[in-house]
Length: 639
Ligand code: PRX
Image 1 (cartoon, rainbow, N blue to C red):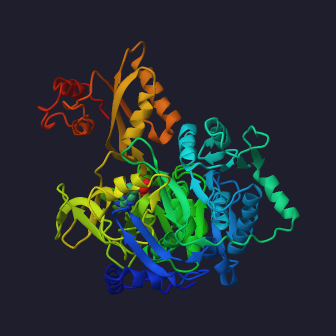
Image 2: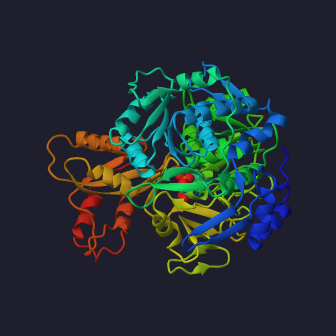
Image 3: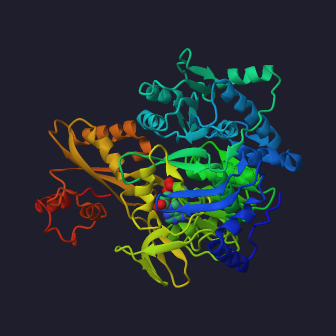
């Protein structure tokens, strides 16, 4: 496959960027012409950021799976589409060619259809990182259903919340999932979630771990049995359902500053064009290369750069079931050598955790197939950047530091590998279609270079969030109301003397723990559910590996017994309510929280104490009970 829109020089980048901002419709109309459409669009773009109401390729008809699968079959049917490396290195890997993946997606599309799934229905997918997860995702897209993938680390309660919000009547899951030395009983977690979701009509369960499961008559069916039924009919092809460019493709839940996760909605046409465009340009993908994105498909990175971006580009995408440190901390490097990986895309937290093992696990690894390295999910510190550059890329692989979000669908600010300059800890320049602006606390746009501010985006790119599922107002309030006519990212950034952007982190009440977004309000709600807790406040603190750790201040009613046990109980409660990723790292019991006279918790002070600051806590004169600050500071937990 060739990519007529692949940028090949800095100068070409500058021309493309300028054109995309001056005339987005002409620019993206040209890019979109390279895709397979059943019917061409009537209008490339109409938009306003006030409602917001954004439409790309309106009137266009397509099915994204025809772009990810069917269109590659003639020329590259025998090319590997997915290489799968299992958790256990002794188990055999699997390779699915485009022909095979197409076949399996067609089969499973029939399964979905036979089980009642129709266009527009919501299907929740809760599986480990196995090829069938990608197959389930693509089959939903083929039948026109809206998938909502839930990361395997979320608890039953979190799943129930998401199922209820999306009103999802169908579930695809596994008996269990392997992750490192652990075996996660996914179906059991689903069963717990379904107690609160009687509207779920069908659960399709794939066998992976052979963990005992309870299959409920009339509701639960085995994946394998359903496939068998399609086989007995001779495996007919499943004609892809025609979708409007603006029909929803998926919902993905993400945390914000309020207590409830939001269902970010992406649509078929714009998301396809933008993830493909950014995949091809940021990584400078060359046909036949092996692309290894280490994210989980339960997060946006996996959606965009394991599934849709690479497959729509006819690329080979490597999917890994396990974790970087099992059975040892050389696992990534073994995989790179085994499959001659060319592009490795991972998270700073993974790099830092591998750094902590020293250079031993890198001994004897060739890593000579690598051409491009990438990072995503959080700011990368310079030390980790240099380690990655020196010991993994051997100083010959450009590193792309890609800044983006669930809501943006694809990479927004990043260097283009080997084409535009890199700068350690800087995401650098905006992609074509992206017009970043910095805004000060008064809402004024900050012009010029060597400046900082809140990062906003001025005009729409094809994969901008369209709505938050079932609650458009929420989308408006969260992203389009802080500053008129701008999309607000929730991040702070600085722009250096060359116009390069450095993302400094969230400016709202959202934490970034090991590259996972977690709302402080969500964690507080979970802590407050624990019997005995009166109230709590959660803030982030710098953590060597995770980037940010979770520090909880808890006012506890009446402590009988051991404080340490109570801490563990509270942490366990959070695991049960949200999932282990949200477990607080530190819990400090306090007599009271610093509040203003109007009852607002002064998080600024709590953040400083958690960061280790005991002096210079700022103005405390407006506090209701200034003495609590001293008490909290005296009892600070040392990390
Ligand atoms: O704070 C930014 C951080 O991750 C947030 C988005 O999280 P999520 O929607 O889960 O998506 C993560 C994967 C795209 C952003 O608001 N972030 C993401 N990439 C970077 C980053 N911070 C700094 N540098 C990055 N490259």
